[in-house]
Amino acid sequence: MWKIYYRTYTQALVWLSLALTTWALTSCKDTFEEPEPVPPTLSVAPELTTDQLSIAFDVISYKGTFKVEDANRDVLTSPKIVIHDNHVKVELTQEFTILKITDATQLPIYLQIHCTHPDLIPVSYSIEQHYGVISYHDIKYGVGKNKIIEKTIRGDAAQVSINEKGLLMIKSLKPGTMSFFLTDSRGVVNFVAVSVDKGWDLTSNHVEVEGSPGELLCFSILFGARQWTLTEEGMVSPFNVVINDEKLDHSIFPHPWLQLQVPKTDKDKVVYQLENKDGHRATITIHIKAS
Image (cartoon, rainbow, N blue to C red):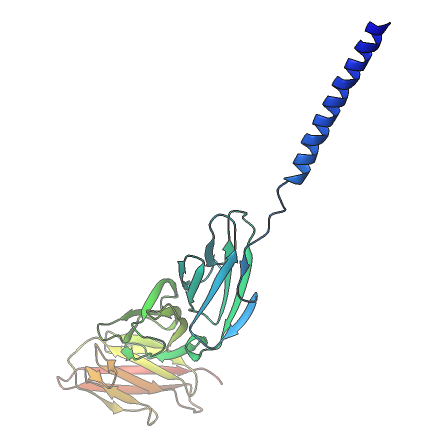
């Protein structure tokens, strides 16, 4: 009788011990359970406006290590980001910037920045280019030392480059349009659009073209020596010009160059004649489109 009671008592103690151990383990697990991960916290508000070209902030709390990057992967140039310990300095290159800050949790926090400094306000340049002409343009903005972002070139109406003096060179190739983006040495980007006027190469002593009243037509004279003059004008206009000089103002004329304005007249065509110092003659007939 006593043995049975003792065995039962011993089994009860074992079960109680197991229960207490299980409770203790469960309790410890609940006590030391990992907290929910949170993104990094910053010393600035998530949206800010500044009139300065750079900003600075601290990453107050983070797990492991953190990184700061431009959230917009489609931008042509990104801001310069310098990190020292938990301090971050950003050199801005755009009016609007969004930074993405992540740490070991891979939970991002975003910082939206609006810069009102005039150097970062986008500017668009529109340049009208005559056919047959090479022109130079001093486009000044930001810190200078401009470069053409080659991958942004669209269209083939002109060839563009930056010369050793920092001037934008535009060489017209054919009538039409083209565009590209410029960046200064800081990374500030601006848009440039080029429009090349209607024009033709005069390679023989006669050419016939078509134009609308008031339109300016350009001709690059590719035969004969320089020193051409208009000897006969179908209609006189102050915009009818022959340029024999190779350089004029900020432009270069690789060949003698002629500009004619299509007259407003009841005639359906007008004829112009040229002659150079060697006696070469050329005739240009313009068929006038109905207005």
